[in-house]
Image (cartoon, rainbow, N blue to C red; front, top):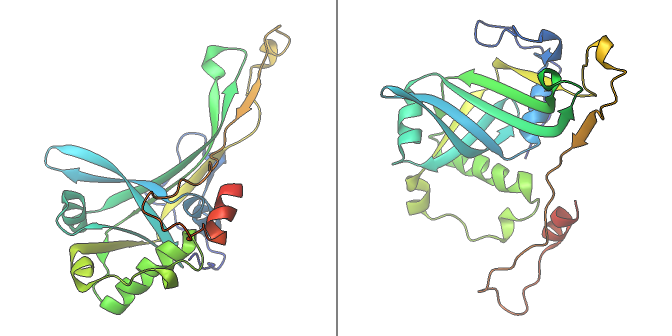
Length: 222
């Protein structure tokens, strides 16, 4: 369940300072949160041995913190606790076709958050943020589910980052062709891209009299 944040500008750091096309960037926390909230999928970057790992995982936000979870035995959950990580969300909104190969581009929204992960150790808080994950996607579903067992809770690690160091970057609009190229007889423009839910696929073990709840039907319509 996403909660509103107060209007706030994050302070730029060496990691978040925008060098390339800074006019597309923002440190506005509301803009960063909007990008984080628009998808449940992120990529988490951390150092492991001699390599850098970038792992896709689900995330969610509650107030000024972003959360993710996984098996307590997983390398990602264990290794990332001991270092500064980078959590990134990107939305591809369109392909930009210009009049030269050099100026082809993409319209996108992206957010990057840096910080040291913190373990959600308190059981009540852990349960509350896991509930927020489900409720943020499907309002009303948590109360219909079997409660998690103690074994499941013990097997799950929940980590969080404070939204204190990060930035957003957005490109939108038509191609940025050179002025001398605008009269060339070449089609230019944007091919918009969206993510759309298809028809829900019921589990084959559903009882015959169990129908999709309203939030499933609404999700698919949206």
